[in-house]
Image (cartoon, helix red, strand yellow):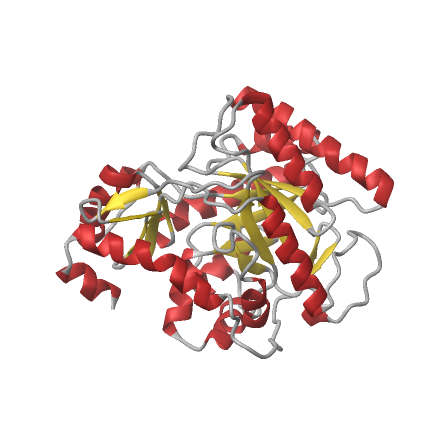
Length: 378
């Protein structure tokens, strides 16, 4: 359907159609698919947490924890909620169709399977998301895990929930850092792991790379203080858009108490990626109007290379088992997952590819098919 619509509709109408319908579509998913998943071909244990599968959704899909039932019933190995913010935020709202409609912008690139988004972190605020996680846990009887502790729960309940957190785009300096710390403090009691988003291409991050160490130190200090009082140390991961020098990145993060890297977020150097002519035309229209980040299959090779570089750095620094690599970017099918495993990454995430997989077949079969073990592809 998408290629046909892109061929006959003006770019402006095509972008509006998918941007305007995004919230409605996600609202439909929040009802779940019913029943319970029963097939988990890729269970694993990472950072002391039991995962019923090594593939789960990336941040951005489930901003308010309203899709936890959907992902659980679908058979995901884990879920990431957010990115959450310390206070509500509308995100980037654009006028479309000559000002007749306003919404956050998103569009698929139908020929390549990629996507562009300029959402800008819309959020109802951390309290709403944490309340939704608590309610999900009560409904399903799934308590947060205590990393490294004996856990006898059945495999189907080994469904870790991560919370993605970032500083509020409308805040600066100490106020922004305080907001991150507040979110971490509120998330730790209900989350199995934390993912600090240092990579969203659609908002101003504030601070330079030199401020990263201070931010990470503050986040780790909150986690460690809570661990002393509760006996439960929640792993913290950092999501990056580019890992840079992998050895230096791993060294810096591990030095400040970070437990892993999520690599990589959406990309903005659009000319670096090959696209079919129709998708290139759509991208040029969209980015001129809305900027945004590129995701999905077009960025797969870059993300594979960066995940492999981080995994190699972890081995070189003898941090195996203590520092995890999570690969995200371009996963759309079983062969992609096999290639991802070949990088040495312990876990992997998808979003654009998940939406495509849902459109192609039975939802119940998506995760068992995509995560079935096969020989890793180099």
